[in-house]
Length: 86
Image 1: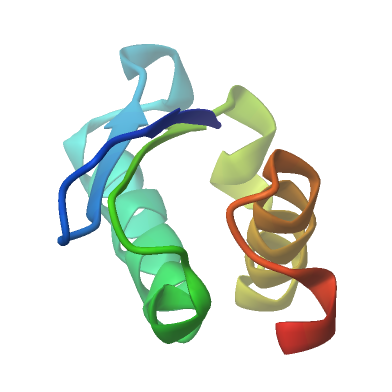
Image 2: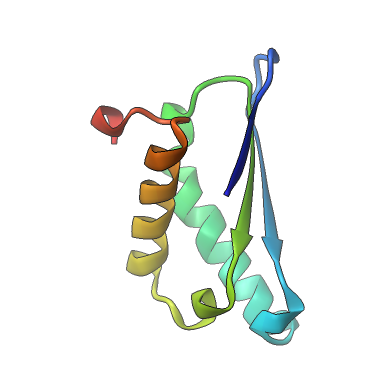
């Protein structure tokens, strides 16, 4: 996860899924799972954050629970979200 603090009011989140993960179907599945996991944390993210989430190869076999836990931990570590808000 890459984070840039910006002086804008809106938050932007992007996803990057490598072709190493698999074919288009596998990549889109991972992208949808990540997007769904991030959706529940968006209200807690500081405004003006620019976030890029990079899916690694092992995300291809991960469940929604695993991805959600990884997103939560990454957001917490990055300082974009206060751990008490989650």
